[in-house]
Image (cartoon, rainbow, N blue to C red):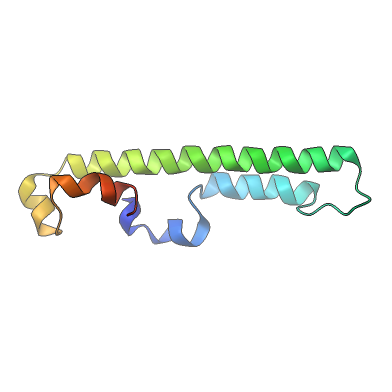
Length: 95
């Protein structure tokens, strides 16, 4: 569940996907110099875009999985962990 996921806080929402995007960016130079060619600048921008897409998809999936897992619990089980059905969406989104 994303609300209790310590890996997410340390490594970003994307986890592996973010690492892949970081490799793409670092492979092309994260901060191109002023004299960098246009192709390097474009490749860096594409790498950042891909990373953002991966991050967005991974975060959406984590929220969806958390919501689904919490929704599958009984009211008693939710009460045991200090939640109500009304709390599920906020917990899934990390609020």
